[in-house]
Image 1: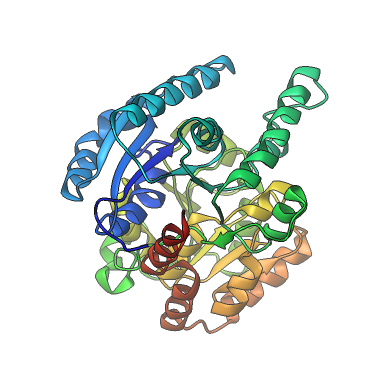
Image 2: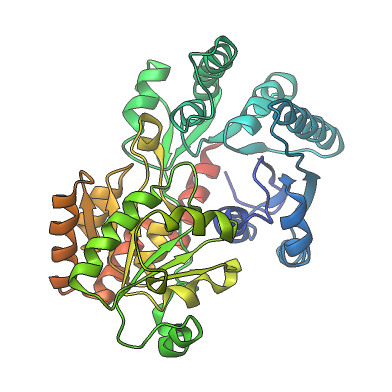
Length: 406
């Protein structure tokens, strides 16, 4: 296939481009691909994020000649709104396919891929299933679906049956991890699935410690002393993220380094985070919580000595690639993680930190001791991390996938 700008790709995502995730894990890839392909993106946008970031996202899409069709995401406690959003997205996809010819669809996660199944049969268009994880199992593992309830059990079984079709019918499958490949092949009952592994990538030009030499000023603005030891967490603190265990690790760090500060960079509601920390028996003077615009994240990370990320290790998490891991390592920050997806092998290769097997007090004590006594080479961590997480390499892999679509 000769790459040319007349190859039109319809990119469908249930996540919004104005979400932090959209700005870090959707747009950078498509900007890198837009020199060779013409994109139309249909996305579901949360009203507050849309209001805050519409202008930024719209202008950058225009500058890359990307057509963006945003739909309003409707949210409520009711599961019916997910169905409403799905059919709204489906209707827009079919309307767009009648207006313009596309070579194939790129579907980010399960809802877009379900739409692509119908599209494939009606319009004879192939699709890429960029799965992002085992979605139905994530709902169960995250305790969002209780399969003891007959309704949720039926919904789960429905999606697992559809999952088989999504894998089998896809022209290409994108997995975030190598660890998920045997499970995908066992689901499809074949060894012939076209699967490419592309972990969550990081823009190393943005996440570059050289650009943030004045970390003393950053610390000063956060009321952190120049010589304090700073442990950093980045991102959401809900559902999957084990804040209590991370606070437990920090308590052990305080025993050996009483000057330590736990810096939490999150856009979660401040009162919710504070309430959870209040039961951890950690002095409030040792905690800093700050929200951050996506563009400001590298600046805040420059204030950190170490980073931490504990995520519930469930069946579905074998397919997960934490975005924050690549961002920490790109900044040369050693990380304390637990073993999900390919994290353990990635940390071993980069020499970029410690992977815990358990969360016992003795494990915390040993890992803290190892963390603060190991001489980490920040430049080497960053350089080796590019092997897994460099955005330009991810774009090259996507181009290779695109070339194979027929």
